[in-house]
Length: 451
Image (cartoon, rainbow, N blue to C red):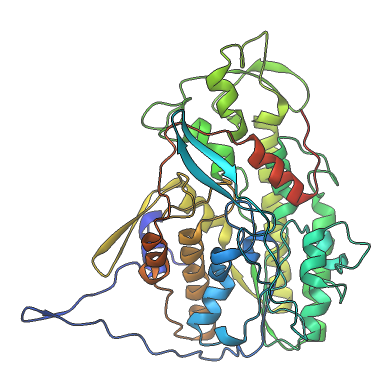
């Protein structure tokens, strides 16, 4: 990774966010598109292994107009191989149905889109290039083939019982494989507000074994270039941090400094007043705003609404361990590493102004209904804008590793159709009810909600 730059400068450099606009007299000249050069990289058979972040989930669902902007699909298009990059495409409103933001007399509200999406790429006679299954843990990637016995409807939809993600990737005889796994081994614990191995989380020793199995298997059975991404800090995503760090949160002042400290229930069952090291999860917002007793000694916040300091430390420790394992197996197999851990922390912490072609785009950790902010309405997955940023981050790493010159994805060209359709871009100064969002996320992870 680049060194010597602050976080904002690193993002701007990595993403190529400033496009030059030349002037000749009074007549604007179009910028010259960079010439594509793949260097030593062969992307003729580009395959992706992973979970919802690689699949392109936005607003809690997979499919519709947003699916074409999964970051691997954006990279494939930028590299000139988009026509052959097959995904398990689904019509709007996706599966599960995505949520969207509306305004009501009482303020913003998040509702589920009506209906359900329909798969439209089922006639493919081979496996998809993008094999990522929303909700998949590292164990699933190595063991779930999507057959009739699979507990995951998404795995059945994407894998068809033809083999696990790893095995189908091998069968495609790939030239390049992206591996991004382990996220859900820790994310379920953050969303559920409770760490229970093999219920909301996967123990680090099991994660280590699965990473080894995937990377060793790919290295032994293919001659593909391997690229593996690190696991983001799930305690730094807006779903976890917004209420106790956000600049428009009801628990903070205008600078995002926490000023309200409710009484909470910890993961160990203790009842105490919250500190700056505890996180109040998004689903608690409406109850806090409408029930004056919630968060008092007589009615402490439920453990489901809190990620307490001890749980935060435990999850962060697991993530650092898992990322060390990823780095170790990358070295053992000659894989390139993309430091998504650092990228997500930077994206969550600092608002970034994207300037392209003379147009400014604000990129922040607030929520929109799939518009120009960093994260989508579920508080976990990027918005389309966030996926563009992520794609360019990966492209920079590919260019560096393989002496390539893959052009960046245009921020403006990707988002302008959304602007034309009137995509909502409403900062949620008044927080809507995120409890249904939590239930949908937990369902995606195969976790039963608890009180």
